[in-house]
Image (cartoon, rainbow over all chains, first blue to last red; front, side):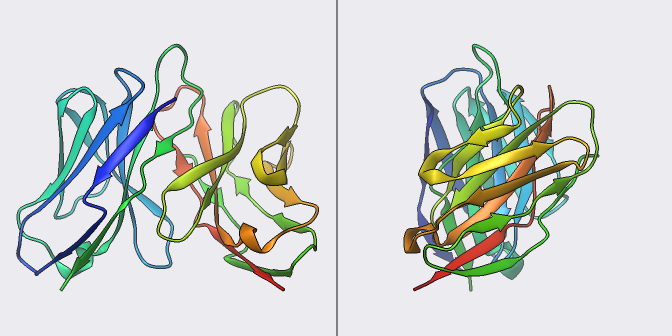
Length: 115
Length: 113
């Protein structure tokens, strides 16, 4: 089964600083990859998803960007953080082989606090 | 577009009591349905899933859910809860073949001794 690694686990950054959150996947190839954000006391908001290397779909216009430089690597970035970027960021993976059953596997999350 | 409604944002119950967490989704011909659990400061863990076949699905930790196509519901149940079941529970739905999973807003289950 898939294993999703996220780092850093916790991050405290000043407003206006850059951001890079990394996610890597083991146990599958050519997966769909997703970035979700979970604000305090709220549900999951899909930010980006990717069906292949270099292919990024953005769900919500905002201060963030995503990249997929390798098949099992997904990076979430920002050039200048805003206070509203604070939250719990979750990377998720959906296997496509042998047959996708639609379920996502999640990493342990990265908690970002912007001060 | 697919949408998911979890009718209760918080559900407090006493230990060893039964619990039902409600989930409704917007109508679709063919869907996959999921329940996830999230413990504090952790990622989401799959509890159970409905893909096809029997409408009663059993998952981990003694949870089960029933798919009701006519009512477009997928309610989660457990006959006797434990303190360790305290967590956030998310219902999710995907149209078959879709790239994205749509999540409900979550239900916070609190177990009181």
